[in-house]
Image 1 (spheres, one colour):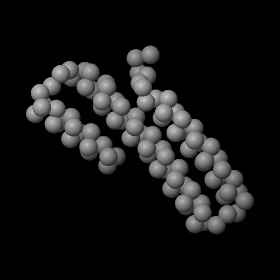
Image 2 (cartoon, one colour):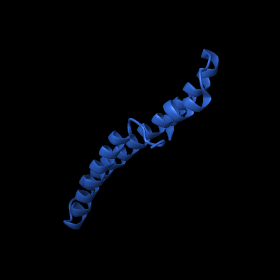
Image 3 (cartoon, one colour):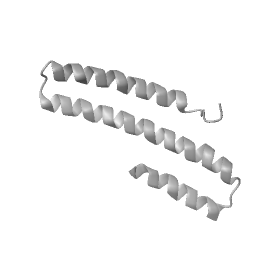
Length: 90
């Protein structure tokens, strides 16, 4: 498949782990666990999904965008490198 990249299995693995974690948080809520514990666990799931998103975006930049642009000189490459750095703030 043209839209399948090397990192996709890793992204799927992370998302499945987050999915399982989210299910356990729902169980925690239903069991009446303390809000602090719930917030900590939700934060962990949020970070896991964010890391999966970052991996997917960086993979797209590294492969799809670079492949469509083609070889670049160092000065031209700087713009794409800066864009990649900006994605940290998504």
